[in-house]
Structure formats: structure tokens, C-alpha cells
Amino acid sequence: MNASREPNARWWAFAVLGLPTILISMDQSILYLALPALSSELGATSTESLWIMDMYGFLLAGSLITMGSLGDRVGRRKLLLLGAAVFTVATVIAAFSPTPTALIVARAAMGIAGATLLPSTLALISNIFTNPRERGSAIAAWFSCLMVGGALGPVIGGALLSWFWWGSVFLVGVPIMAILLVLGPRLLPEYRDPNAGRIDLLSVPLSLGAILPIVYALKEFATGADGSATWVPLICGALVGVIFLRRQQVITDPMVDLRLFRSRQLSASLVILFFGSMTTGGMYLVVSLYLQTVEQHSPFIAGLWLLPSTAAIVIGSMAAPGLLGKVRINHLVAGGLLVTAAGYLLMTQVPEQGSMVFLVAAFVLAFLGLGPMGAIGTDLVVSGAPAQRAGSAASLSESSNHLGIAVGIAAFGSIASAVYRSQMAEVDVPADSVSVTESVMQAATIVRDLSQESLRVFVGDMNEAFVSGMHVTAWVGVGLFVALAGIAVVALRGAQPPQPSTDLPGVEDDDVSDDVSTDKALSADDER
Image (cartoon, rainbow, N blue to C red; front, side, top):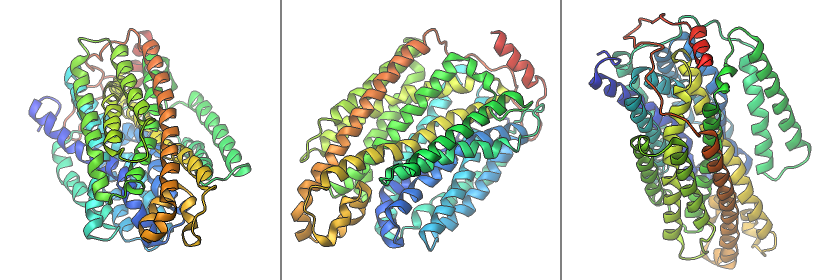
């Protein structure tokens, strides 16, 4: 089938691309509720639990720029299928990991393989759907797949944990990847930039060297460390980041074409996507732990309570493209961000008892407002680059999303834990359960194993400390989203809906178009 020219073929191709999109997002959230059981059975420390949770997301985000640039060079379908094969093997290894260290390594391999998938899916969508209205709907549906995957992760993980061992949560990806490997070569066309040069091998370690030290610093901060353990890696990561960016300015074939950032709407969209994803990822973790620790729900039931918020963001993202002709882009995005801020404002008023319905309603409102940001912001980033650079632009968008989520988990988890530890330090906790004061994650791991007699002694203080931490993180969310709404109003003023892409015509199977060089496309973009 010619996915570039036949409408039905295009949407069949999208269906195949939606599978890895759902899975990658699901694997980032599937441990939100599985982490307590996993940590208990593997005997993971609180630091190891944090690395198990975040290693996947951080290496996924850290490798996206490399893989997006690589896809532009070797072919986006080829990289997609190669990544699917590697991801499948890493998933099986993770499921049968005997130690926390082995699982951390497997999660790292999953993150690197996952980084080959997301920019390829988004770049292929932008190449296949050249009509701006149709592309907007496809990207909104793609963003919805990300959100649905993130929501299904806890539910599916919770259901599997009710019947099987913790490793079963990883094996979900095997049949999904099998479908992609079978149908991908038949339904997906191949695209690559015929004029792309070789990938700069020095830029690859520099990009990771900029991200991973900062990740380590956040991890140390999350465990209560201070001093050199936090600031030294943070400074080192920032310095390597500067070196990476300077190198991109002087080499012939940069991994990140900094000329793309001359577009105000592209730069603003990336900022909004990063900080919006950071807050969302962090608050999702805090709320999911609240449902387990304070409300004492099983992972499966807790996951079900999170589903309404996902339905809300899907509604918001799918409705956004249809509103573009009626509402200005900057007003539509800013309005959604203010709705999210209102949802987090309600979360600052959640009481300690009888609050679950109130909390879920506030969370639904917050997620409803995220739809326009995700759908329109992603489209602005991808359509703002020449078609030959679609993979690189997609990697920037996904780096903002996934690095934001990973940073949010560490940062918001650290804030909530700091408030929790501060209040629990004044509580007289029984000797057999003193470790419950270490962090909110540790509490979620241990509290369900304590006797009712032990719980009765300090459960009220524990819940109060947990809710206080959630209030503080929600206030941070309010401030960030109000600020992002202001950025959207100013920076996206005058932004127009994306126009049809004519830089790179659709190509079926393994043929590659060489009609327009990357340099010419970028030059034309500069002139505009």
C-alpha cells in the first residue's frame, strides 16, 4: 500500500506507528504502581528503586537526539524496526532480572532502544500526512497514544501483579513489538535525507555527558544528599552541555541544527512541552503513590482511579486541532495551560481524609488543559523544520517531553519526600517501621506490610505528612503553568496553523526522494 497517497493506507500506517508509541509511554509509567512490589521482591534499596524507575526515562530522553539524527541518515523505518527488535530482547531480560542491578541495566537498554522508536514514529507521521489539517489530527492522535499508554501502564501493571510475578509487567511489550516487526515492513514507507552526512561520533557521548551527570545530581538530591554529591555533577553536566552546543555550531553535519531555534514558535513550544511534561510526570507519580499509601488501594484499583485523567487529556488533545480555525493558537494553548493551573490549585486544597474523589476531579481538570499543549505544541515543532530534518525535530520534541517527565519524577519526588521527611522526623515511629520515614516511595513499599497495630500508631501523622508534600508540589505546578501560559500568549502570538509540507514528497518502500537538499530547505526556511 502507498501510505503517502492513499487515505486508508495512511491511517493503517498510523495504526502500526501507534503501537510502539503506546508501549514506550506505558513502559515509563508501568512501574509507578509496580515499584513497591518489585522493590520488595528484589530487595532494592530506596536509591536502587529510584534508578529502576528513572533509568529507562533518562536514557530514553538522553538518546533521542542521537537516534532522531540517525534516523534522518539511515532511514526512519529501518531504525524503527531495528529498535523494536532490540527493545524486545531487553524487555525479556528485564522480566527475568535476578537482582536490582541487572534490572537497572536492562531498563537502560530498553531506554536506548526506545529512543529509536519515538522520533521515527513522529517523523514518519509528519512525512506521511502532508495535508496540515490531516497531519494535525494524526499528531493529536499520536499524542493521545502517548497519554493512553501512560495511563494503561499502571492499570495493566496492577492487573498483572494481581495474578503473576513482577516481571510480567515487562512482557506486555513482546506481542506489541512482534506486530510491529511483522506489519511494519509492509505498511510503512521508508524516508531518509539523501544529503545527510555522517553522524558526528563525538557529539554522541557529549549529548549523554550533558544529561547523565545532571540526572545523577537529581538522584542524589532525591535521596537527601547535598554538597559535592549534588553540585559537582550538576556543574559538570552543564559544562559538557555548553561544549556540545558549541560543537553543533561548527561541524558540517550537526546532530542538532541550531538554526531551527531561530523560530520563536518552535523554541517556545519546546520550553512549554518540557516544563509542562516535567510538572505532569512529577504530579502523576505523587498522585499514584497517594492512592497506594494514603488511600491504601491495590496497584490495580489505583490505576483505575487514574484513568479519568487520561480520558480528559485525550479529549483535550483531539479537540484542539478542530479549534484552530476559531481560536488563535496562543490563546488556545494558554487557555489550556490556565485550566491545568486551576486543576493543580484545587489539589492544594485536598483534605487528609475523604478526599479521593475531590483529588481525582482536580486531576481530571489539570489533564484536560494539557491537551492543546501536547497536540499543537508537538505539531508546531515538527512542522517548523524542513521535512529532511523531521527526525531531528521529532527528537527535540520527544526530548522535551520525556526528559521533562524524568526530571519531574526526580524533582517533584524530591520535593514531596523532603516535606514528608521533615514532618515525619518529629513523629515517634515504632522501631520495626522506622524506615517508613525515609521517603514517600519507601512508605508506599513498606506500609502495606505493617500490622494494623503498628499502623494505628502513626498512620495519621504519615498521611498528614504525605498530603502536605502533595500540597507543596501542587503549588509548584500552579506557578509553573501560570508562567507557561504567559509564555504562550507572548511567544506564540501570530503563530499560524502549519502549512502543507512540500519539501519531501512521500516515498513508498525503500525508494528515497532526493528532490530537495537539506541545505536548500533550511535556507528557504531562513528566508521566510
